[in-house]
Each structure stands twice: as C-alpha cells, then as structure tokens.
Image (tube, rainbow, N blue to C red; front, side):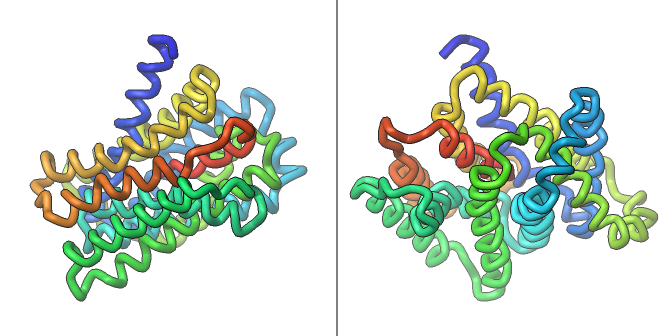
Length: 302
C-alpha cells in the first residue's frame, strides 16, 4: 500500500474510533435527538452540494428511493439515535467495543440470507470467540440498570449488520457518498420536528458540547465518508475493512484517557477477544467478491 494509502488508513482508524467519545460529551448537555439532528444537518450541508454537483442524486432517487430509505433507517436514523440514547448510561469505551461485534454479526447475517456460503471453521470459531468476549464484557462491566441501554446497542449492531445487504442487493450502482448524503438529509428531516423546538434551550450548552456535535458532523461524518471511499480506491475494499478492527481500540483508549473512564477487567479481557473474533469471523476466501467486501465496509459507519 502506498504512503497515501497508509495515511488514509491511519486517519480512518482514528476518525471512526472518535464518535463514541464525542457522543458521550454531547449527550451530557443535549438531548439525544438534538445530537443526531445537528450531526446530520452539518454532514448533509457538506455532502449534499458535493453530490449535487456530480449529478448523481437525481438518478439514484428516481430508481432506488425505496432501498435508500431502508438503508437510511438501518444505517443512520435508527442506530444514531439509539447510540446517543445508550451513551447516557454506558461509557463511550464500552459502547464502542460492543459495536465492534458488527463484523461477525454481519458475517452470520450474510450466511443466513444465503449471500455467503463460505462459513468455514475458522469463521465460526471467530464468531464464538467474539460472543465470549461480549459475554465477558456484559458479565464483568454491566450493572442491573444498564441492560436497557445494552439492548439499544444490540439493535444498533443489527442495523449496522443488515444495512450492507441493502447495499449489495439493491444499491450496487449507487456511490457510497450519494447514499450517505441521502441518508443524512432524510434523518435530519425526520428528527427536525423533535429537535428544532429544543434548540433554544440547547443554545445555552457549553462550548465543548457544541464542538462535539460540530466534529461529529464535519469530521466523523462528511470528511470520514470522503476519506473512506478514497481509501477503498487506494487500497481496495478488503484492506479498507481492517479499520473496523482498529476503531474499537481507539474508542477504548480515548474514553480512558480523555473521559477518565475506567479500564476495567471486562475491557482488559473482552477487548482482545472481540477484536480477535472480528478478524477471524470476517476472513474471506480468495474467491470473495469485491462487491461483497464493499458491502461489509459500508457497515463501519458509527
């Protein structure tokens, strides 16, 4: 991989490990629906003009609007609100690590849907290792009052794991940035009636909360999408997928260092198990197609 490719890889590994930290900071002062609305509004304001200037939005909407709506619900509208809501009770590091279960859930989902018949022993072992890692996290780090938030994150994992199937089956010819721009606009419109009336009270929020949602929209959404698809062009979809194994470690590190979240025994044991499980569960045979690999990396958006 070239120097440019490595630079993109490092940037994406960090950028998509950061949202959990920023969401945790933002929900301390903003209601979850306001966090999601502001993130989507900022991201849409940057990506939509880019998409319009390339003339890709109209054809995509005319031919694929139903599939785009399904993708939007599974990838952004549902997961982003659930994540923001869950992080009112869960640490950013634990949330990021739980979401790391997406790759092997996606592998299992693809197998059940008949899209992937190469479920080898190694991949099955990876799924089992990942499940053990998550069980360790839940057994050692979760209090009784946090199970509802855990359930919300589980729904996020399901959404992130199934959204790629929409991409691979219904939207193979729609550019990722175009699909993301549509999803951001739709999600912002859906939550606007609930978020806009609360913006007056949110205006008194401290500067760090506003900076967090601004960074979510600009860096972790708009810039991230542009860099991500540049990475795919530079390194290929299979190598680009590896960032999903680095993001949780970044989320844990940032939570511990910047938010003084504890590095618990559950994290110490569960983190390597979950990451090892994800690596093994998503191993592909040489016969794996670029389309299926690209569908998997589309599920990495936090």
